[in-house]
Image (cartoon, rainbow, N blue to C red; front, side, top):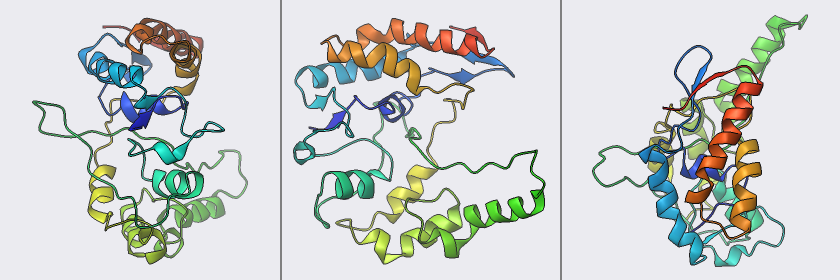
Length: 241
């Protein structure tokens, strides 16, 4: 297998990196949702024959019973190394590496999605704002802390410290530092953080259809409707062109 689309965040790996305008803030409270755009349909067209011949699974990588021994490669976040191949698939150290994101024909730049990642928040109701701010600053920027973080940090100095830690690097077959550092700056900013989870429309409209044997391309209209409904339910104005 060379991929899977059955996880609740698979759309972030594939459609986000294709720069598909599935949920793009174009105004203060206006969301663009256009899954008929070429940057969306090119990804579904790419995946459809791979899903049909089962080289891309309709199961999720984290589905119980998933056979990780059949996975040759995967498109996904940096934490796939330790959390997926090492912990879940039990792939021995020195057998996998990481490569830069692929480019579409005719495009000079690459783009990635953004799957997962921890977010620290401070409540405005806190009576200890100064201490909470100091703690959050330390958690997110201290290289002493981040060099031992369980996954690759967002803070550049902390990311370099993490990569310099042999505990994090030695699982891979070669040095992944340049790939990780480059990919972290290639997350496409057109897929916006919203007041609803993008996992819900994907899980409700797309995953059951794929399990039933439908093509990914055929699910795009229903997926769009599900996103639009979620967006309107939390107060967004939606445009579809």
